[in-house]
Amino acid sequence: MKEIVDALFRNIPSGVGSHRKDFKLSPKDQEKVLLQGAQWAVRQGYGTDRDLEHIEESGRLEGARPDLVSDRALERGKDQLGTLGSGNHFVEVGYVETIYDEAAARALGLFADQVTVIVHTGSRGLGHQVCDDHIKKLLKAATKYAIELPDRQLCCAPIQSPEGEEYLGAMAAAANFAFANRQLIAHWVGETLEQVLERGPKALGRELIYDVCHNIAKFEDHEVGGKKQRLCVHRKGATRAFPPGHPLVPPDYRDLGQPVLIPGDMGRYSYVLLGTAQAYTETFGSTCHGAGRVMSRQAAKKAARGHAVLRELEDRGIIVRGAGLGTVVEEISEAYKDVAEVVEVVHQAGISRKVARLRPMGVIKG
Image (cartoon, rainbow, N blue to C red; front, side, top):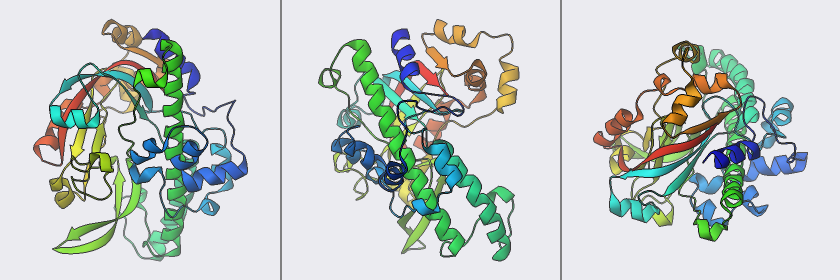
């Protein structure tokens, strides 16, 4: 596991401002990424069409407007595709520790003691810059359209206003960058495992279960007051949890419901669940994305003083590598709620149902 984690850490750049020296996008290719998302990556040989079947929106959000992405955002993104970034982003190698629903697990391709990999990252500096650029515009728009804000960070504009339409076009482009980013990282994770274990992809049985967004606005049909309506659903720190039979659930999973991935922290566990009909009627087809912090990053650093965090994790069988010790310390388990309790809540509430629990063995952090 040390060899695998070290190799992943070498092959997937991580940390603030991380970039790839061997993979810089030309302006033409960057525009294609912003328009085509993971579909661009697959066309370049990074994955297969079967992967696209298991990605939300088939790895491409419609309505992307690369022309609305600023030069500064493009500059930040040009050499960051295929990088992890910082904060709570990670690649986690784990295994299926507990199965709650044998039939559902089998249909998803999961079995006890199977090795799993979770990739958590997004649109990197490009997406961050898109957000910064449009927050300034939307703050002005809120005043222009006489929208009262309880918090400046909730700045907004009417969807069909010029400001609203411009943000949605730029956001879709950033979402496509994120789809492509995860697809490339997943490909390089696979290559790394093949190199270290000296096994081909067929022998490893590598298969993408699902790629789901958790910071995105999308147009969807929902029932409101007994009437079907087209809505813009904004999931921030939330993930889609569509029910069995929904046409946007991949055909492989349509009888089950959409796979839901809820990561915990690097020292405990993560979960695979399925979306439900109840989520579709009660929460616009949504569930939580993760455990959620209970400590600020500064408080986590303070709580970790006097602890050899990496050694303590290794004593528990978890190898962790990070771009810097400070980042790892900010992500200690104590900084997060126990995801088992969070998952039990969404399971009991009926907005997603448990399938399996994954236990980490090796983690690379931003």
